[in-house]
Image (cartoon, rainbow, N blue to C red; front, side, top):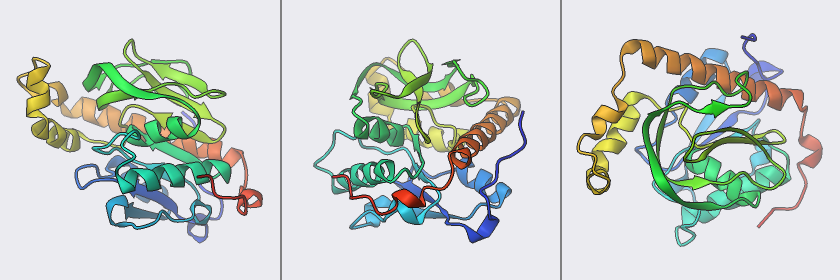
Length: 249
């Protein structure tokens, strides 16, 4: 495993922007990783923002999970997130999309977001073409929709039920939740009892339960994935030359 990546310049550089879309979808292990690596960050609650910020002010943008779909364009927060991620792509500010965030990134790049024929709930092993960037897991998942790999992107990982990861330049879209812990996803399961019952699942907590060893393995895999994403983003170099491009609507 390669040594941890660092943003050049340490704390003097622009912070990382984390977009949180609901009280129940905190950044979890992503914040643990940023703190351990000494990388500055800012967590914004998208439901409190009237207008998305300028992504050029940040080193990269991480868009988290949400109770929404990118197709829910009647929701102002969804419209603003689509604008923000579109703006980041146009300005070549790296984007890390996590579940909903990955779906938004796919949609912005011309991919399709659709109802998943089989929801992925709980721990899933994935088939990965690039284990140096995307370990096979198992990873925590909790989604009822799925994205397609956008035109021009490279599909990196999948399960029989959904694409799990793609890369487009410095941008990485994921369907699973490397940032989430058992405690976070257990809350989602407790809120989804009716949906689970409709799927014939009586005990959502059983899908997520894991011994300490698996939790630690998942934490290490998440840190490895975040390091690999950052290393690629740094390798692609500064993006300030694109900072004055027009906003993508």
